[in-house]
Image (cartoon, rainbow, N blue to C red):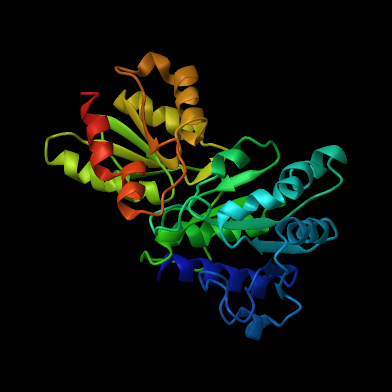
Length: 320
């Protein structure tokens, strides 16, 4: 099953399980969304549960917030994560705050699906990874799966969660294949996973960068270095216990993210290591991230800005 099929399967299973689950987004009904994740779902569940919306992100995300407040469980598709900026007020000032503002009496059980990431030459306004904006906002959960199994199990958990969840899907992962062994599996939010054991360095990654970290670890093992790869899976809440346990074991850390370096998720992870694991470190924490620049359309320039296996290998070698 591909990553895209796993997300679609999770949507189908949750819509069959709970009639309160509805979908909203631009062109999601007949066309199936920009990446065809919701294809044919309108035929299956009808136009009252799979709703095409106008090109007005703040408005239809606001509709979803209202629907969640009165008992539905909307799943909103943002065509490209870059466009989520248009809905920031509804997500950050309303969805994230209502539970607190109303003393716990209001709940906003909604999911905002956001295709993110570069690598297709889409340019500066269609290639960003903006998850750090939402990690910074109290009241939101942020999920960024790296495999079909995680995308399937974590999306089911996100839909069942009573809090607003931003679900980050990397566009280059939509075609990635992997097993989804148990369709009933619901993976808990807030738990990282050690996807490769090692003793020399911890590679901390999430989403598409987990695959690059695994490739780098395999290459480094040929030179006698055993890297542990920790897939964060959920960025908020962050699994600090798993992070610190891995760093205590390997005594070195390289953080890999596709978001820009300045103020990114990697900066938060580095701060957690500094505060809770500094005494375990044998060397400074390193970060491999996108350069602090707009993403170019030119494939050559785009690749120059993005993290790569070679950059991860070089960062690890600088620590030894």
